[in-house]
Image 1 (cartoon, rainbow, N blue to C red):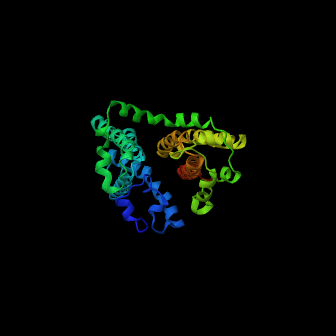
Image 2 (image 1 turned 90 degrees about the vertical axis):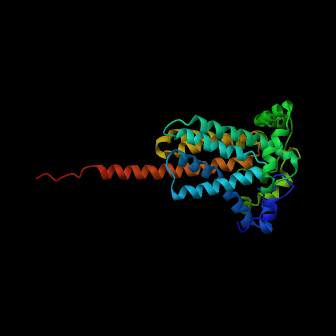
Image 3 (image 1 turned 90 degrees about the horizontal axis):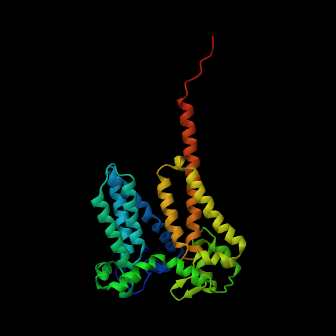
Length: 307
């Protein structure tokens, strides 16, 4: 909160500026790192808010609601589709863990997520972003005609078009760009932000080459590493479903969301999310395995010595 540039947060005219390092005072490495970490709290807070809706409220619940509301407001103010994803997580998890069906509540939340998605897409053309722009962004879909609605909704599948367009290119990437694209560290550590404008390839000024296309041009070793990681992660999640408990649902949903992004976003944007998810799942599965083993040993009746 201390690092945020409140002038940018409240009112700006640049798309995606709110989520960038430029939105941090001084544009320093610490601000950029904190920005990336704080962004990860959005889906986590949404998950816990959803579970709280189906169970019972505690003092901690209000903390999660505060984090969730803050992240949702920033996403809407930045005309980011992540706002719909955040609310969609609430819909999915509250459905999974509800003690009894709540169709009207779920339908209402689902409609809100759909409207926010359309508002993010149509609101980008307003040229006005920030917390003060939230009312105008939310009202933006009311200005669309039928054709624009259809065109906007088709953007859900833009990853397929980006992948197809990217394959028409004949790209040759710098080795340092390839290596750092698979780095799990933020730019504050590996300085990827320096190499991106030098060696990154965009299909047009606003559309980067997607990860599925990039790894093909990177070469067979990088392609095998990328898809091998995804296969191993998916298999590990499934095999350890009982060991990781509720995180199986959260991890699977997170995997799906990031996988959809592989068509439209570069390798750097998505691969480290898979790596971090894999590391967390492995640590959690091993921890729960040790806890279960210890509990099983404690439950065994003590052997008595024979007389």
